[in-house]
Length: 154
View 1 (spheres, helix red, strand yellow):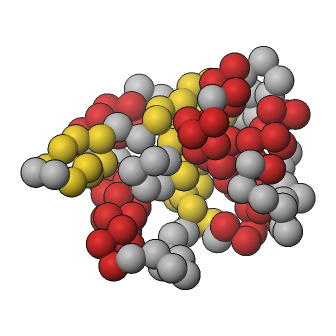
View 2: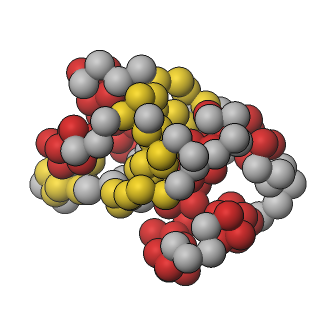
């Protein structure tokens, strides 16, 4: 059994965990340029997901954030929609997880953004990619989303 956690968006990541919560693989959200805009490369996401026998996906449920511009909100929503559509197209069962829910189960309510990366490093100290600030943050969020979905039994 394998589960995935997905931090959607152009700066997000997908993480694969095994049934015991062991880290298997990750994908920094692949991008393509459409004119001057970056979009999620759906073909690359689908290819990555097909490589693994995924039993369930946990996808962060996204919404507009205060102070976010209209263009960036559209881009973020588009990226999340592409990933959700691919999951549906591949017939992978999935659950939407609110940021508040996964952060609460990880003990991160009231903490700064980097606290997720710190928590993931505690749980997976050998996972060196977590040391990278931007990519490490996206991977940490995806790990914690997956662990929340698995009931933190992982």
